[in-house]
Length: 349
Image 1 (cartoon, one colour):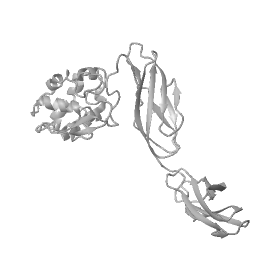
Image 2 (spheres, helix red, strand yellow):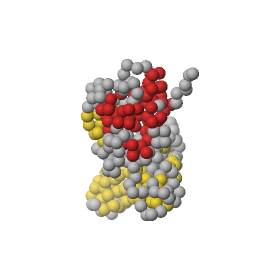
Image 3 (spheres, rainbow, N blue to C red):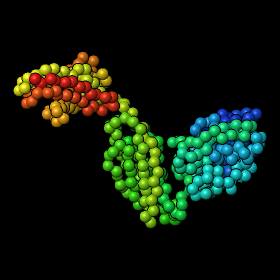
Image 4 (cartoon, rainbow, N blue to C red):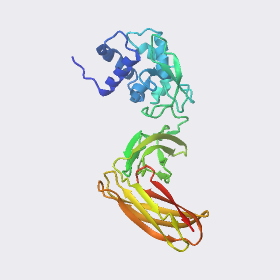
């Protein structure tokens, strides 16, 4: 009978092959003998949702602490059936997590026996024949699902999901519905979100929230959940926002009168160009400083049609009341993250 392979099994198969765990056996044998072994041994656990990262670390060429324990159980020789190795390490605390939970306790709690929160997770070479030697430390990959460690004393577990991706000015939905309370009541009363972009935090009784980022970049999103006993738990995830198709107005030239007499008008000219694909306008701000004091500030909406050359704008003139140098600066507040800044000077005689 031909058995259809799932995407998850194919990922695990590739990972184990790369790690050297399947030496001297065919991929078909690996599928039938090993790839289902862990799930068959622990059919009620969701720890395996970590896929390759259940045993691997930062790549398929290395292992986390759980993978290392399994490697040690093999004693440099791959067995025909890894079940005994899995059972052998059940009472070990491979990841040395703060709860001191055994691997089996973590598996039963749907936690990660090879990972604990923080950056002090050991990494080992994925080389069964070589003993899987220590190579360094690493943080938990973003692909590894929460919880990393079992909850303590019936406390809740915050799961912000992720990592997320999105575009500037397009709302994304952050989903904390994977959060739970580990005691018998299993009640989460509130979800508090932080977005990493200096916007206001959001406190809600619902597990999902919508948020819009106005600048591209990587943001750390935090979720704190509170249960019906007032206990809290916080975890974070990564949001990556791309520029996408956003308005981009660049400064082509910024010209002011180089010299002027007291009481005579100083001209201020700005030319902008739109090198992108999005039409729109943005605020250009011109500021003049003389003797450490701001003597001029003006905001003006500027725009340019794509591919038709630069568009010029005239700002209101300024009449200086004192001699000295005026330092001028102009900025454009568009969505694109490039620096839209230019400067000039006027010598007032």
